[in-house]
Length: 132
Image (spheres, rainbow, N blue to C red):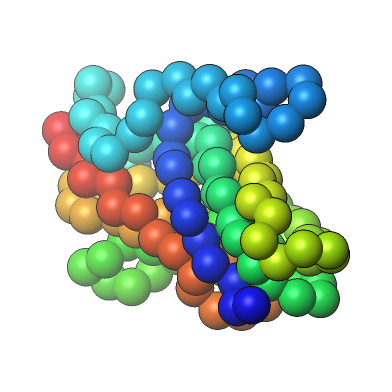
């Protein structure tokens, strides 16, 4: 079964239940960011957290996150290192992973895409609109 991203969520913090993915607490879902500093840009966010829930997949690959400014296509932030992910067992099992993305830089106002990359391929993305 091919790897399917069921959910890709960008937020401030994720707390996973101790036993399984049946209890997930998401703090402050992020779809937009407003700069309150002067000057407004560049804006640095100390941390964003991503939660990805998967189903399917086979073997292993490298998982990372990056932020891309839509207007220029430039990567403005990325995870410090890739995570090696192995998909084992029943392909119908739902698997989850939490990734922290420190020191996210938004050079100017506009639309940014937070992209989930698996072995060099973008498999999910979420928009964030940044304004002053």
